[in-house]
Image (cartoon, rainbow, N blue to C red; front, side):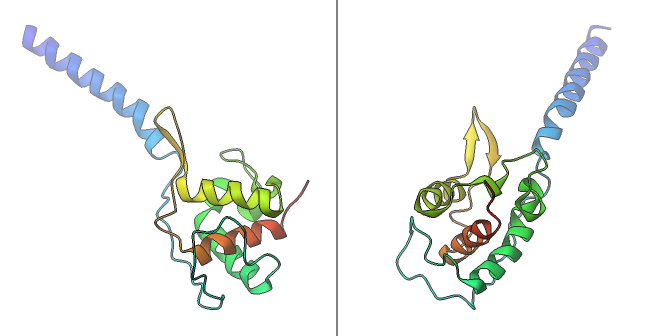
Length: 143
């Protein structure tokens, strides 16, 4: 009887842990990064940069829009309009100040109290991809 209770207690604890933790693991869904085709953009030879070299570049806006849709929209919303899960990226500061914050967050991600709020993309995205996405976000900026 004692063994039966021990097994039942262990199974109950396991069920509670699974129900509590598994939604957290999938909170952002499948965040497997998609490749970003930056072949049409001028190559960035010296990086990492802290200032956007593509500011106002129409091709970079197009590349960044596609990259954003494939890699960022799941959390930050279509068109950079947040659905509440993550910050509304249309509100990022424009110019050099916004560039510095953006590139730091994309490269390093955001982890608070051991919880990943945004994965780090610094080893995944090329310099060109990071700045193309930033250029797109500048193009949809709102105050």
